[in-house]
Length: 190
Image (cartoon, rainbow, N blue to C red; front, side, top):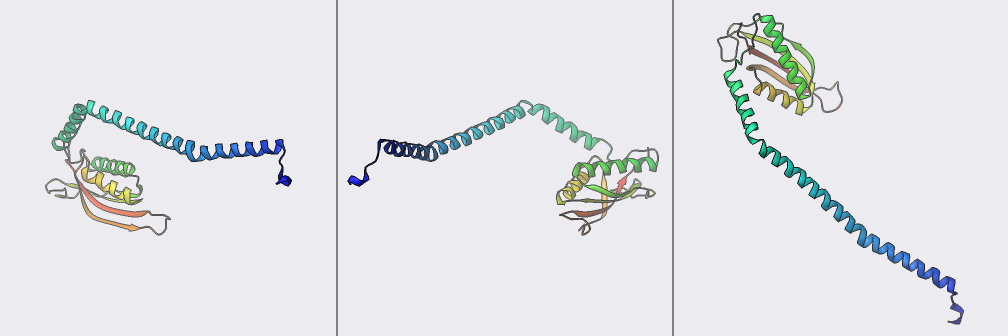
């Protein structure tokens, strides 16, 4: 073993290399996983704190929320669900704005909206009052179609859907659908 003598400088280099390797191993196997677990724990605590703050806010405003829901339900049930307007043209304009607003809120793009038809006698949903006919064509995804139909069903005005078709639009790329709806809305004529 006399031929394997290391100088003091070589022994120091090997010792320093071993110390650095041991420190890197301890960092990778010990400190780094500990820091990652600590970070995940802190993120979970922050998310739960935020959730708790929102729940406390909802609990604090529970009465106000209940009143708002009650007032909205009362307004929908007591208020006129028929389109207001002195003339059929004014009622048609209100219906056009209502349908455009529903399309905007549901993320649909209106390609055609025709409410120029004459009112139909007894054409209102439930019969009796005259109804304003409309035809709406819009483009959007499945979520937009369901949102639009939900807004039509639960909206402030009573709408009766006569015909509806939903089909894929091959001219447009992606998951877009073409929705066409023929409907009638009751009109009070006052």
